Image 1 (cartoon, rainbow, N blue to C red):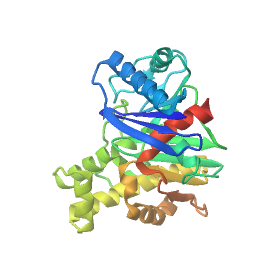
Image 2: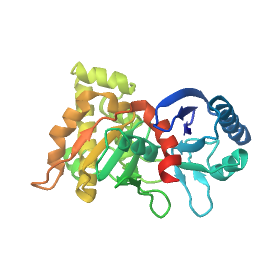
Image 3: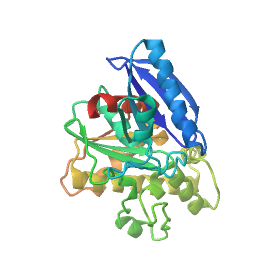
Image 4: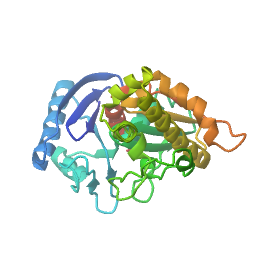
Length: 303
């Protein structure tokens, strides 16, 4: 059996999969705010209980929003304070007395979509997760690409295309938590969509409310979504030009809207080299289950 933990700032999803990766059970529980020993103990207790229920010694994978530094094993996950700066893998391995595998949550998402999902059989595939932030991952011939510091795929922290400033001269240069300005994440995440609407209207709305206003042709929402979709299309266009993936898979809450894929298909060619053929942009097959499933897959395919 394979166990996956998808670790977030407010909640942790835990799921158990059999050898064919059919999901056999799942639960969600609150992430301990600052109590790291309690966090490690909760993981240990759930693994031990699952071992007893399934009469096995399951293999364990952890997914989280951040990076695992290869030199000292520290987790860099500022959005999850309880594990930020901790040697999570080593500590959980010690608690469980077995190997533990860990990776960025966007990597887990893409790994799941590659195995029986929307990216199956694609030689080079790129993923973008559009949630509170923007995650990214790159997979080649079934292997996730990590990089020197494990940060391959941090596409949300690339700068936006300069042509957008010509199209929208009043576009603000938002500050990013990474210390830079005008990162893609600050515009095309769910948080970024809210910032754009505040810029266009002077009012604050949730992402769902902004989309409803756009569908009702509210002028400020129409301008906001036009900006949003062009910024996202330009960002994907830059990545497609540089990496030439066979497929792009979108994740996160914003990936749930079918109209997003139609809009991107119309706009993407305008941000590619003349004559370039755009790849297919697809919705995830596993949806919200992808992160925890991909975490469990780490223990099978990254081990």
